Amino acid sequence: MKKHNNNGRTARPLWDIAPGTLTVGLDVSDHDTHAAVIGANGELLAEERVRTRTPAMESWLRRLPASLVVLETGTHARWIAQLAERCGHEVIVANPRHLRLIYAGTNKSDRLDAIKLARVGRLDRGLLAEVELRKPEEHADLAVITARDTLVQVRTQLINLVRGTVKAAGARVDVCSSPAFTGKANQVLPAELRPALGPVLEQIDALNDQIQEYDERLEHLARTKYPETELLRQIGGVGFVTALTFRLTIGDARRFRRSREVGCYVGLRPKRDQSGAYDPQLGITKAGNGLLRRTLVNAAHYIVGPFGPDCDLRRWGLALAGRNIKAAKTRAVVAVARKLAVLLHRLWANGEVYEPLRNSRRRERAVA
Image 1 (cartoon, one colour):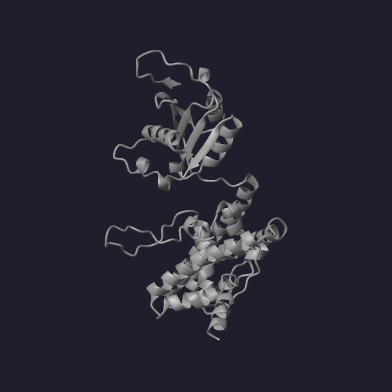
Image 2 (tube, one colour):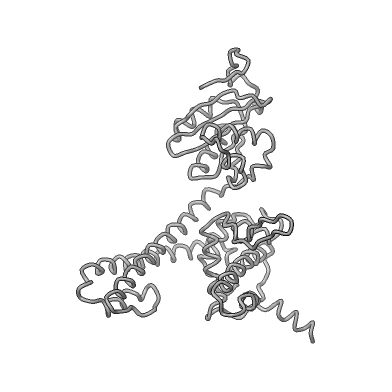
């Protein structure tokens, strides 16, 4: 372990230092992790580069007295945090979006990032916007949704490939559902394109079968393991995939004091850059989990679309869209997705029965 001492004296071994007085910053990458150890008075006691692998990390962490370990969210954050806790350390997983001090610097390196993480954690852990990690079983169940989502995206790309190639040859595949696409495409596929696109259609069929298997598995999970998703599925346009994605991503409804905080959490709140009279209209922050945000937006598209059920959300979204202008409709869909996130949390947290036209009927009674 590389030790530092600003006074030129021999550094005191870290294992001799009293537990609870050290703060450790970890800047994690795929191959190596840069570690910096800060003492109680802010002095840099040690630095080291550790392999980002379980044996090396565990060996290094066990050599430290009980400390406060700070690292950012990322691919390796979960297993490193769990490992550090097993080694007797307190762990903070920080939200990098709130650490402008680190990523906006002009002299940025992994070593300096680790030192800054340790110093911020020592000074005020509230600045780190601590992230709550999911339970291991919930993380595993969410991985099923992520895998399904990836297959759906691949299927969409293949369908778009076939549509574009067929269109360039002077034919056209009729609008249809994804499971029905290969049947429609085979009817109009030019002979000269069959050697190129035939295997692609076979892959689409295989993906349809795999996605169907995932759907059945997720529906079983929702009904047996997460029965609270039934509260969320009261809303027209919210199926078991949307409900389960929301439940597993949020984890615990009690983590939010107010339901409206959920819209900000999933990145559906507009950004703001106000100064004096300058207050431009900006896009959404896109913070938080991208899969949940995309799922909510897809549900909002259905709610305000031609087949959406009549409800307060739909009426509000259509009124917000106003005239048939694409930009206005896009903003309306995002706004409906934000309200949908708030409504889903409220139903879950309070166990309420959903009334689709509750606000509309209340206004009608007030007028009468």
